[in-house]
Length: 89
Image 1 (spheres, helix red, strand yellow):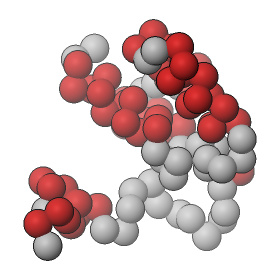
Image 2 (tube, one colour):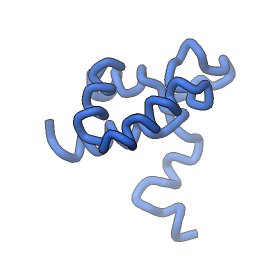
Image 3 (cartoon, one colour):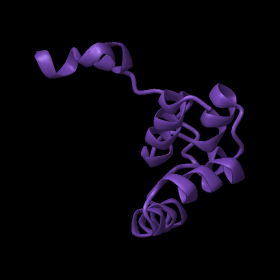
Image 4 (cartoon, helix red, strand yellow):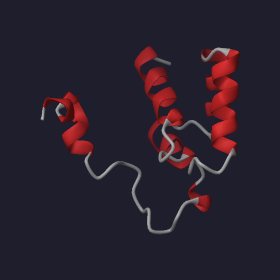
């Protein structure tokens, strides 16, 4: 796997609002694959913090546990965020 894809999967995994289903759809990585990747790429302490956060209920990483009003995978401002434009406002 390319490093850029690995970096993007890790970034998506850290985001609370990005469900595992979005990662599966975009990169064909199941939840178990993401967990394995995170365990391999992160330091042990970082991995433990991530797993604790995903399982704590704060995160909405599982589509079935999400509020039904959330029907998209990306932020409504995603276009504005792309290419670092949001920081240039």
